Length: 448
Image (tube, rainbow, N blue to C red; front, side, top):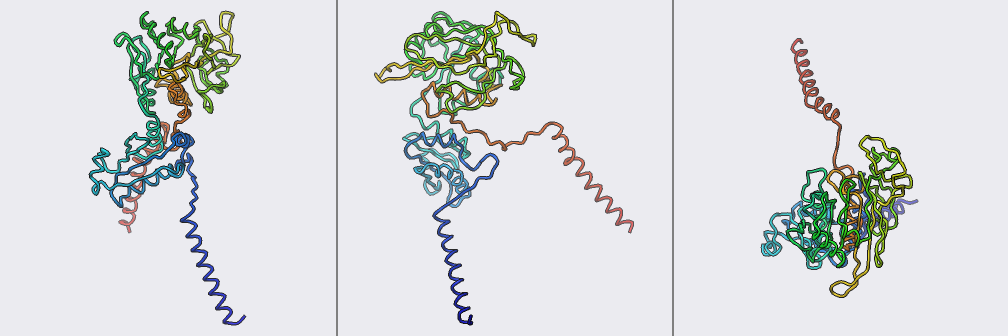
């Protein structure tokens, strides 16, 4: 090969190399591939968020109020980019507050970095772009109008405002608010009526019987097509006979005993762990374990027009213990009700609404209120099941199983001995060791 041929070959190779670099550069601007290697897939939208986006037809606009060139713009664009990649008609608009004070006033913005989300004429503000915050905001925007969840009061029911008492339902009520539902109490003695805008009425295990007039109002509410969640613990009177008769529900006295508790690991035979679910709209696609401490069973025999579907069923080995279990040991006898036991059920019926349109009335009855209490709401799938119940009762079927799980590695929990060891090493031993080493070096040098 001559010198001229070698030179031509080098020039051609160089041009091909440059062409390859240019081609790669063009491809990187047109196509983008990402890999999320975090343990909890923190940089990828969860299935819950993707399902929420699928349930929201039409454009969603995020308006970000941040100065031009600010780092917060890039951070917000990165976080919201997960949503824009999943839904093509999501738009992110950036507005410089100092350059557009009129927009700041129009959107009622109070701080730099605030984001306003618009969807179908509804608007909400958010100050964080984490997935739970953004998706919860989208859930609230997905439904127009107000949907009220009313908790019956006045009979020693589970307190819905108390977030500290382990037996109260305060944390669950807050979860409902976060999902866009309005929550308040209802005292029938004071109000003497159930408001027409009630989406769901919750009877959370009253310890005392309602007055005859109250029971009649509850019965009329159901007869007119109202949706109801009825929770009844074993130690509380089932009561409200007119309502139970209207629904065809019989609450059975006793505590459901699960002999397989040692295998499952619940720690007590009176703790019912649901590891599977019968066919029901509430639990469709739901595969998490749920825990029900000290539940009772019930039997449904609804009148014509109602459709019954079991929600929670025990194993055949379970039974309803009618005796005392405070001694810690129980044994099945002839007085007990043999399994399988129905711990929860749902009722539906088709009827015409006030506007003449066909609607579906929905009722859920469960023999336990503890699973939604502050002490147990965070156990396995309890919160998600509670959310599914309320979303289904409020006819928000698109919201079923839409709850963003927390990333598994966002907090570090150490036992007491580990905290003590770390404190002793870094606060005491390490400083003393460095001090001793320094003094020793100083003394050695001084002797020299």
